[in-house]
Image (tube, one colour):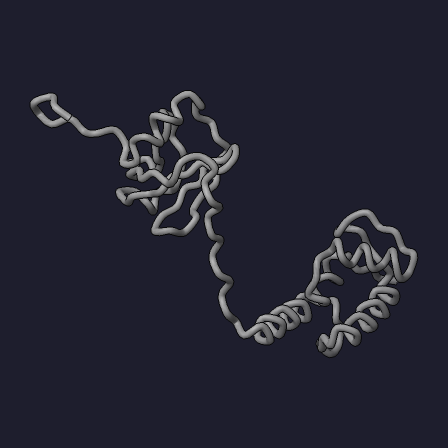
Length: 177
C-alpha cells in the first residue's frame, strides 16, 4: 500500500498544507503534524476527489499524485486567474520623518545614520529612498520596495539623518560645503 505526503495533496487542491491538515482533522478526524506527514493513498484519493468536486477543480486523469499531475493543476489554476501579475508591495507609511534619498555605493549598500544597509549590486549608482517604519528600515528604488531591514543604527543619529534628506553635503576642493 502506498502513501502520499500532505504537501502533494495541497498541490493538487491548489491550497496550503496547513489548510489540508485542518480539513483532514475536521472532516475525517485524522490528526497529522506537518506537510511531510503521509496519508494512505486510498484515503488521500477520496479526500482529494471530494474537495475537488466542492471547489470545482478539474483533476488530471490517471495517477493524480505524480509530478506531472501537480504541474497540470498549477498551470490550470494560473490560466483561470488570467495570468495577471500581482501588484508589487507598496511601502508602508514612515513612522518618523519622510523618505530620505541616498546613493547606492559600489558595495550595493546605502548609508543611513552611520550604518550601511544592503540594497543589492544591481542598484549600484542609483538613488534609493530610505524610510523608518517602526523598528525597520525600508529601502525603495523608483518607488518600489526593494528591502526591509531590522533597524541597526544608533537611534540618536536618526534626527541628523532625517534632517539631511539628500545625505551629507559634499565638500569641494576649497573645503567649503
